Picture 1 (tube, rainbow, N blue to C red):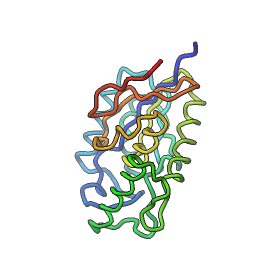
Picture 2: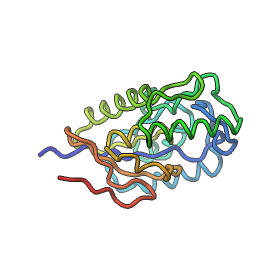
Picture 3: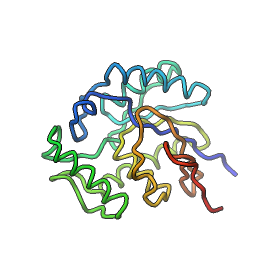
Length: 207
């Protein structure tokens, strides 16, 4: 049996859009000082893992998070547009708490209720986000069978994609991804498995 692709996923380190309460993809937001320290610590956490590729979204904060890991391994950072955070259209970049609440409500509808047609303002639907994220993960796994890869993305798009890909049935809701904490998923050419979602007990799969 072929060894599965091992994909270490993580949300980017703490960034200025998060501390400022700004909603949307916000591609130009950079890491905070704390975020840079978290990125350095993350590289240490993965020091023993034989990572052969590092993939991020095109957002500055994911590329900055990847920086210490890429430098330690002598690897390029592969920035993939499909790994972007959820787009919220005309509400992009808003610091209005009502937009933040609406964004959270839509994500809950996608993950808990399976209502993928919902969207924030004129932004992406869950169907659109899931389609592009699935494309990205499937391409990464296809290129790196049996290898270890790091994928650095965003809280909402990662949560929706991995909840669906790994058939977690909404178990991800209520435990938002912490900043820069790697967790492992695997793909064995037949199915995806999430071995442990941060903040939850290890997942149990039927064989």
